[in-house]
Length: 499
Image 1 (tube, rainbow, N blue to C red):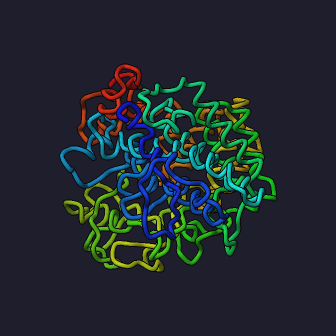
Image 2 (tube, rainbow, N blue to C red; image 1 turned 135 degrees about the vertical axis):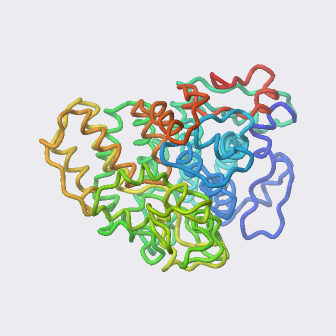
């Protein structure tokens, strides 16, 4: 089936084999005998594990959140503080300078190419589970998890590329028919995201706590967090505020961890601040953050590649006494700001954004098993503060208090209302607080775009490093689609403007 191969072909194969199975059957959907498989609750659980959660991983070089080509890494590299010491034929330079194009398939077009199909897989999973004779509560929960997955993935892709392609069930069940699917309208994509997350939230539990056997599955709290971020990015401040207030409710059980650095330790994983994280464990799923960021001459770790950095210019915006600097390596061996050294195994290109504690983590070779955080409560508090101020264009005591909860946790003095000369001044300070709080957690690009300052910040970055041309324009706010997607779309699938 050549016409929708880029968008749903992977979903048309039988993906309903659980992780416990020893053989993956590559048979078409309609060729599977439903009287044999799936029939049990375990079968349904395996369907969801494979067809839904399979995309949301950080396992080596695989998964939406992997540290080499994942969405958090890609977007923070394409922000004002991300830097990579490698060149790889200009791949990293184009990403971190926002001068990418359709040919940048590794870290720019890859999310659309590799993960758009997962929405179709989830649609087929929902259809298959719907017809199973299993416990109704279990069925409802699993379908809700799949719907949350569809909304989650749709938001990620929409945020990067704009309107998505969603294959309907009839198309997915008839793979031999030649049919090219167009991108939805912006309104249709937005409606799809909101509907999937809203409906899923009606069924899923508020949250899971450490020790719960289902910890790591999607929750109502995750649905509302994604909706909060969606409404912020689409500048629907009143709806964003409502989502933020929802997540303040005690039923979710979210709180800030007292010490910032403790959030990212293995001993304190599954903490009350985590809204959702990728569960990692040796023999199951492990991530490669440490070798990507650490140099190979760092005394606390051997075998690092010295790649990812935070620019010195940005690092200097941290205030004295900010505890978040404890998770950043800005001096080691003989290297410091005065003696930066040369090359990747130094501080020449910037400081090392370690974030996750390597000393107390159980690291085996390149692989760490500390849970990989995707969303946490500090994000909710600061976005709610922002929504309140943007909605009313005034600084309220409540907004200041929400910001201070995150700021004072970092060991800094609390703000008071007179510290802000205007709503704009508050937003500038909040944006910087978020940048310090969420470095390399995939928030900065979104923040700058929402604040209408992305283009200016990226042009400042280009000037700082002598990358004068081409000038970054508003077209680079969205990533491009890979050229093959446009060619196979035969004029029906449209490229983003400016590419």
